[in-house]
Image (cartoon, rainbow, N blue to C red):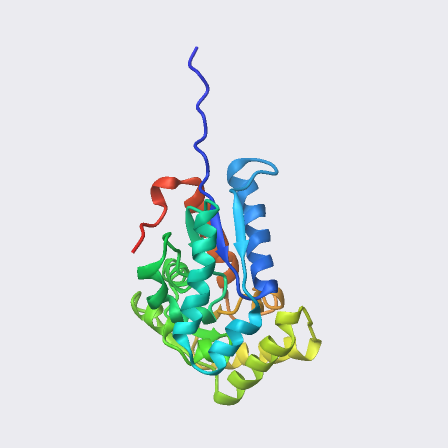
Length: 245
């Protein structure tokens, strides 16, 4: 009788966290998705490191991309020392510093916008609306990744960007949800639909806490959960774990 096939150890996922709400959603998703692939109550080993969110915000406010990268690398080094095999960051905004992080990182990474772009391409979307902090929406993080897959990025109006940023930074990162803020997001997404978008990227880790396909005028690309699910898939299948560099 053949010996039972042993499952290989799932890789250890390191989460480079920025905001608490987004990191918590990412962690919960990894744990719930793990059960689907590994069996009831099972999930890959997960470690999280987060400096103070205020340190990140201070760097973003003064346009200090190198400072953001240094904070991310500090987390990466600590996670590597405790055994993380690869790293993810469920915060879209600080991916502006990714080009400074990846070459110096002690472990390979999954890039959140690349994961979202792959999903958008797989679902056949061609024109994606972008929601997130003003730092993220005004950056090239998503346009670069989406355009590499032949997908156009559409940004909200300046006024919408400012109000969405306020809602995220003054409410959602603190776990506060106001019905009028949810309604504002919904109006913004309807405007993106009227501008010809066929999907909307929820490119802030907190937005999926208040918007999903049921409440959106457009199909949603939930960056937090997409990243978490891809991390689980990579952890369970070590052969697909990304290479460093």
